[in-house]
Length: 494
Image (cartoon, rainbow, N blue to C red; front, side, top):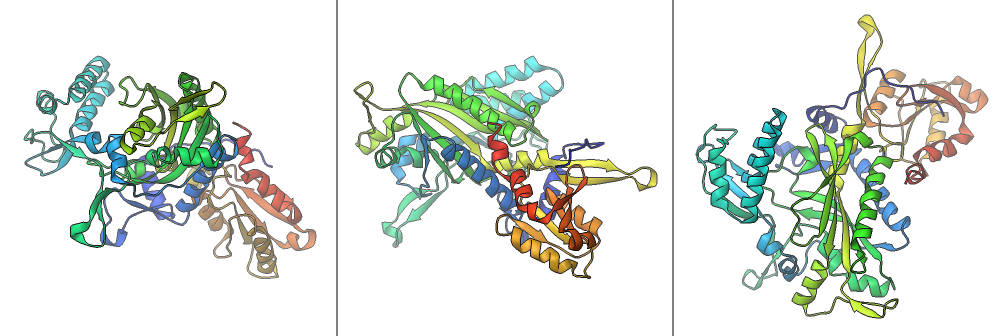
C-alpha cells in the first residue's frame, strides 16, 4: 500500500465549516429542514448514518466481542415511572433556569456564569475564573438559587440578546420529557422518556446475570436513545434533546471498584486513540465535585473547535443504583459470590460515551484543508481523513471513460465487491471531479478501470490522503480493501 505523504497544510475546520460540510455532503441535516428545522434535533444523512453505525458497531464489538465477560442488551425507552424515582431523576434531575424579561430568552444560569469564568481565564486571570467557579459550586451544592441570581448581578452577566441585567428569579427545571400511557385520558399514567440508558441495565442486572450464568466481575453493554429537555442546547450535535448513548455497566465485588475504575479509564482512553483521535487532543478531567451516587469520576475530553469538552464519562457508581432499586421494588438485587461464600449488592463502574459527540469529534478531526498547486493554480483541497474502517464508503469504482467496454468491466468489479463492502459506482463527470466528490465524503480508495485493465486484469487504486496511485490486480481487490477497512486494524492497537 502506498505510503501516506504529509499534507502541505492541514487544519481542523472551525465548527461553522464542519456544520456546512456535514449538511452539503450528506452527513447531518437539521431536523424537519423544510419547516426551518427543530431546535437541537438533527437527522443523520446517507453518509452520516453509515459513519455513526460504524462507530457504534466498533464500540459494540470492542465491548462484547473483545471482552468475554461483557454482554449486551437493548432495553425499552419507556420504563416504569418508579424507576426514575429510585434513580433520583424525579427529584434531582434539574438545571437552574433563568429568563431575561426584556429579550424573553431563557438560559441556564450556571452556564452563563461558567461562560463568564471562561472569559476571565481566556484573558489570563485564571484565579478570578476559578474563584467564580468555586462560588457557583458552593451555591449550587446548597441549592441557593437566590444566591446564584445575586452572583449574576454582581458579575454584571448580561443577556446576550438584550444586553440587560433584567433577570427573573432562578428556578429549577426538570429535564425529563413526560408523556401519558393508556387508551383513556382519565385512566392514563404519566411516564417518562428515559433521560439515560443506564437504568435499563440496572433493572435487568439479575435477568442477565442468571440467564447468562455470569460471574462477578461482568459487564452489561447497551446502545440506545435518551432524551433531555435541555434549556440550552447548542454547538451543533454536541448537545441535543434527542441523543444516543453507548454505555457499559461493569459489576464488581465491593472493595475492588477502584481497580476496575482505573482499568476502564485507561482502556477507554486507549480506544479513542486507536480510532484515530490524536493523543494531544484528548485529556482526562477528574471530577472534584462528585454526583451523589459516585465515589470517583473522570471525563475523557476532546478538543473540539469550541474547546476541550466531555465526550465520555467513567464513573465508579458504588452500589447506589442497585441498592435503590432494591428498596423501591422490594426485590433483592444481590449476587451470591461462591468464591467468598457471601451475598452482596455489587458495586458498579460505568463507561458512558455519547455516540453523537464521538461522531462530531471524529468528523472534526477528519476535516482537512490542504493547499495544492502553485501560483495561479493554487487551490484548497478539502477531504475527510477518516480511518478506513470507519469511512461510510470503502471504495468507489470508476471507468476512466464511458466506452470501449470499461463501464462493463467496472460494473463487474463493483458487483463483486459490494457483496462484502459498502462501495459505489460512478461514471459521470471527469475523473478529477469524481475523485473530489469521494474525498469530500472520506472514501479511502478510488478504483479506476482503464484500457490496461482489460489487457492485464489490473486497476489503478488512488489513495485518498496522499493522492498517490498504485496498480493492483483485480483478483487482489477483496483482500486489499478488506485488510485496510477491517476492525482488526483498530483492535490491534488496543
